[in-house]
Image 1 (cartoon, rainbow, N blue to C red):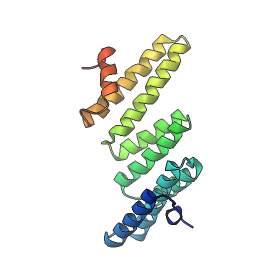
Image 2 (cartoon, rainbow, N blue to C red):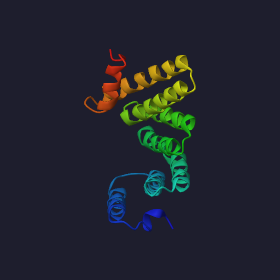
Image 3 (tube, one colour):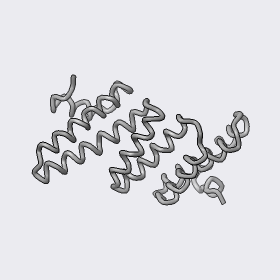
Image 4 (spheres, helix red, strand yellow):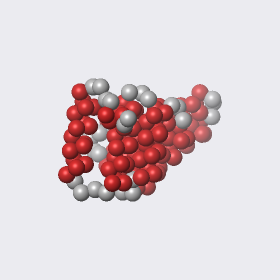
Length: 168
């Protein structure tokens, strides 16, 4: 049984009802509808912390989804799960893939910056300041892109850029 039919909380049930109505009235192919169902089920599983199930649904959604914009969000969510699991290299790969399809995802740039900043901090703890600076410079570039897309957001990142003199 699809997860969308067994959701227990009010918000998930409401979302499922609205999504089902939209799928009926918006002209879409059966493949697009099926892809959306997998995506929706993936989001539900992810919100409950069932990452393995979410990934299965997202992978199936990417197999079926042909629209680059919609695929970008699926790929972004896969990146989120890999980030949560501490699989930063995989996460970066999926954020890159999402941005290839949709270069207007500030949250992907932000998450990439957070990973780079974390790696810079790791390099400092290991005593490698040169590698740390390279990671911090990369984080700065990603944060600049996120901020350019959504001015006024990512205030802490903007402050970090100012404090570290990485702002143009």
